[in-house]
Amino acid sequence: NTDTSVVVSWEESKDAKELVGYYIESSVVGSGQWEPCNNNPVKGSRFTCHGLTTGQSYIFRVRAVNAAGLSEYSQDSEAIEVKAAIAVPSPPYDITCLESFRDSMVLGWKQPDKTGGAEITGYY
Image (cartoon, rainbow, N blue to C red; front, side):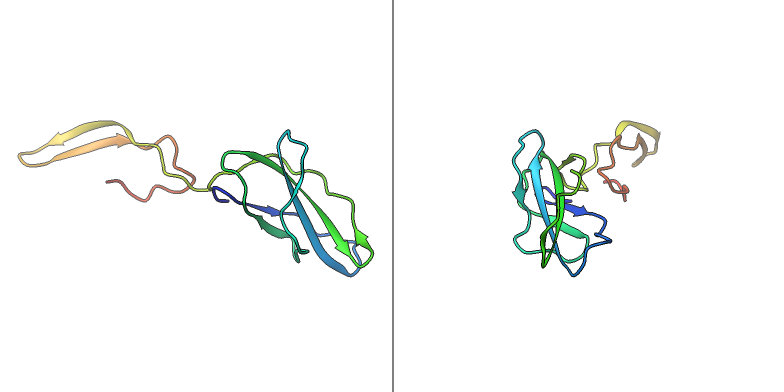
């Protein structure tokens, strides 16, 4: 996920004959208004919905299409807040001097409370 997109995935229809693909729609939580995420049917069971608003929560639904027409909508997804999957970590804290020498010192600190969604790889 990014600041303006969310990856949506679903289980493919098992009983659909000659499936053309899927249409995905999004709705801002509480708005009751649905907007299409794609203009052409998507093959497979994964799609990235772009053009979403950062910090806003959305729900998604999917429906299949074949030569006979459109299926009913899927169950609505859980609400998903649009935000980058990785962010900067919070700062380390409780910095202390453990040892001092004539021209250097050894510092210690506690790891950040929030890693930003990724492993901390080092400190400056």
